[in-house]
Amino acid sequence: MGAYMVALYGSAARHENDALSDQDVVVLADQQVKVPFPQSEKLSVSKYSWEELQRMASYGSLFLWHLRREALPVEYNTAGYTAFRRILDGLGEYQFVERDVVAFRESVEDVSGAVELGDTSFEFELASLATVVRHASILGCYLIGSPQFGRYSSVEVFCRSRQLPSKIISDFPAAYSYRMAIARDLPMPRTPTTQEMLMWIRFASRVVEEVSLCSRQPLPFAG
Amino acid sequence: MLTAATSLRRLAQVRDAAEGVRSAYLLRTRLHRLLLSLQRSVASELDLVVLKPCHLEVNEEADPDVRAIIELCNVILRESAHLSQRSEALDERWESAWVGLRERLALLEALIVSATGSTTPSSNVSLGTCT
Image (tube, rainbow over all chains, first blue to last red; front, side, top):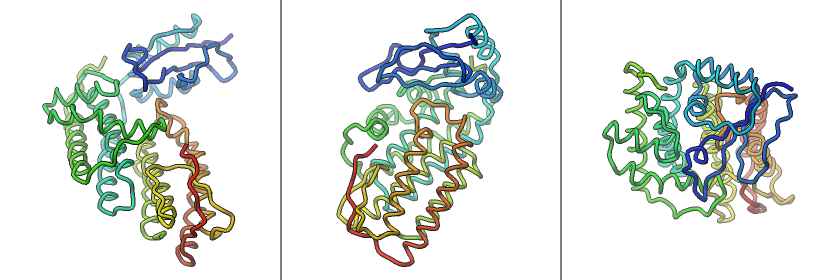
């Protein structure tokens, strides 16, 4: 049998799961290898081959940094465990920081343009902004050497460390609830006001520009 | 009412996310905004509100161009679902998905040009279940 590894990561691995949380599971095995793992509606499973994992490691994938930080092996054989540790222990710097900053910046500009044009829904656009804030914060946390991948903790850690407005932290769960409603087909919160949209466009821009500033500074060890 | 200029600009932005910035993250957001924009423009004819990209059902009596656009939007939304997986590392696999998506978008572009040049959206559209 070929090498395989099944690992839990995300909120369940951090013991921070709530009613909205899935159990994130990564399955690492080559295509022909049948891996036994429990089935559940709450499981969100991502499957990668070893070749894909190696390729992701070659550019220092933040997903692998995520796994390196918190993955809990639940099913594996010796060959799988060895390969998993070897790849994660040798993980290099993330290579796409600049590209991601450009993408975040353009995402915020897109929202701003869409709100101005008015052919969109504020619910969708606030969800987009909240997603930018979360992912930019994850990247920012990595850049300042304090990797965080939690739904809210990444925003809290990054904004606090960079002394960004505390309102970003306090209001973020409400903003991210639109993302959760869209992604998980939950009841949509009330329609955001124009003032709220403009506020979050400013907040998201602020977070992205702060990440951009971090990206120009020497990278601390992000282990 | 479908507006060609806006829809085509949004479509070009989707292409730029994939072939210019090369960001799966930006591609996903722009693709969904394009679909939402098209769906809202059609649904508004019936005073229906669409808050997020979702599956729309179109009656057979609807204008063929509009029906084709909405049905293609449904297909694109379904086929791009893995770009939207919550926990998936977006950097992997999206390029192979883009190959198929690019062809769908070319067809969508042609349909938008055709529909906006010849017709107004039909009222024979009904909302299905958002997925």
